[in-house]
Length: 200
Image (tube, rainbow, N blue to C red):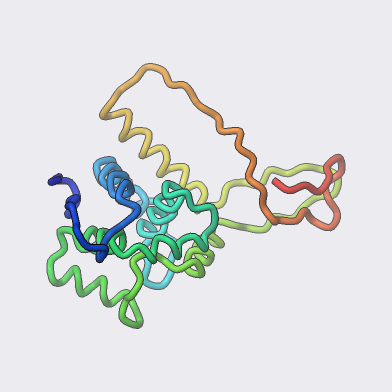
């Protein structure tokens, strides 16, 4: 089944080698490519994690969410999918000449063996979005956005603008997701007056 946006195609395979159970995910990579999402991520986010680019980590987290992952540790499931990893490797080298491929190899201290970032690398990346703010007893404070979170806002604005450019509309309905997601974060030892410790 040929297609012409990113360098992969669907084929019927009689053996189990190179098979993937995540065959629907590359379609979203096509969509991200059409909407220039990777370029927007590279323009606005500048978090340094050894070897991995902002585009690779953010796109991996998007794919993990689309694949139904609930935890950063679920990245191991993406990495364990041989066929999907082959697709990612081919896409990473798309359009690169020999010099560009060498530059990718030089980003790594050792030879690169992973196709998606490890959970530990992603945890370090996500830590860059957090800043501690002092709490004032008896008052509620909504801390300002960090620079990294503001960058995500700009990426989202670019994405909406790219969609609107291809399909202009006069109005839109916002569908608010009321799903509750339990976390293991604890409230501070002296909670703000009028609140009680809860899990979100």
